[in-house]
Amino acid sequence: MGKINKIPTFASLKNQKGLLMNTYNTIAETQSFVHQCRQNNLKIGFVPTMGALHQGHLSLIEKAKAENDIVIASIFVNPIQFNNKEDLQKYPRTLEKDAAMLQSIGCDAIFAPSETEMYPEPDTTVFDFGMLDKVMEGKFRPGHFNGVAVVVKRLFEIVKPDNAYFGEKDYQQLQIIKAMVAQKNLAVNIIPYPIVREADGLAMSSRNMRLTEEERTIAPFIHKTLSEAKEKAKQLSPSELTTWVLNQIQIQAIMKTEYFEIVDASTLLAITNWNDSEHAIGCIAIFLGNVRLIDNILLK
Ligand code: AMP
Image (cartoon, rainbow, N blue to C red; front, side, top):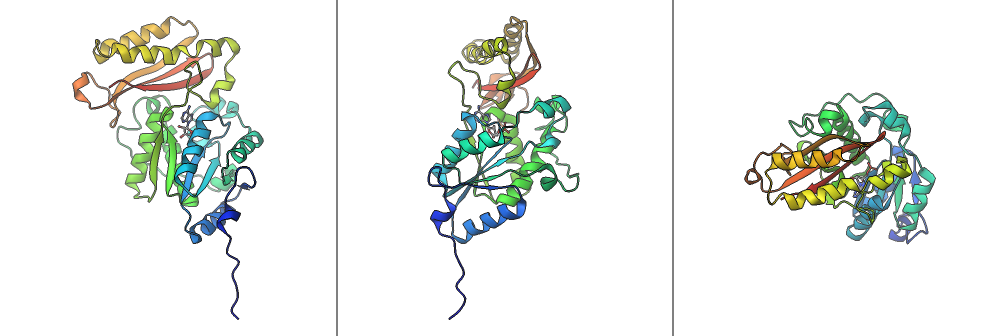
């Protein structure tokens, strides 16, 4: 009799609602899990995160669960996408709590590598995204999107997902990932997910937990202003609307607008006339005290 290979069953790879979730810190273990999934013809959905999870992240996991056989989440605070040291240091890290949340909603595996596991040597790849990474976030956070593209490409190489899920809250990031996948011909579908908000409209973000009580009370003003802007877009030109938004935000003394731009939803270039774009989106970055928050809204 020939040797019988122990082939893992679908059930042994899958987290049947909190029963089992594999947590891996190394690339090798993760690749071995992925390999077993592939051998079993299981479709893999992937949700990359930096942890400090909230319902926004969990919604991505739930969508991934509905559309795939196996869901893998990564938790990695990627140092090379932070252009501000303090932001990196203060980024919340709550791995145990995150793992419990992922386990309870039936995520199948977590990849939570250390910095040296991901970058044994500095990665000097430089991507060319044209104007996509020069505007808005790219203008104010130089190097940020190159760091995002480097880490996501590495994660895709390790996890080899069929589908990967990204939130529209980081709208520019989503466009960058799509561009990176197209440039590198990666065999992964990029699936967007709408912004998940708190009951008062504030876009969920891991950074919200750094807001003081007073800042947290004022923070929903961002979405309130963007929602009103969507109404006003029917009467005002893009530049008039931009001025209106900037003036509104100024009402809140502790809010400082870094940028508000109305851009074409695909090229991310600023528009001067609504007719120039099929879809236009308003993107904002605000400092509320020391905490930088971003949000956006489809205006057309
Ligand atoms: P992060 O951990 O901030 O890197 O986010 C991981 C993924 O979750 C990214 O694709 C984000 O766009 C997405 N995400 C974060 N916050 C939200 C939210 N409020 N709604 C939808 N997706 C989100």
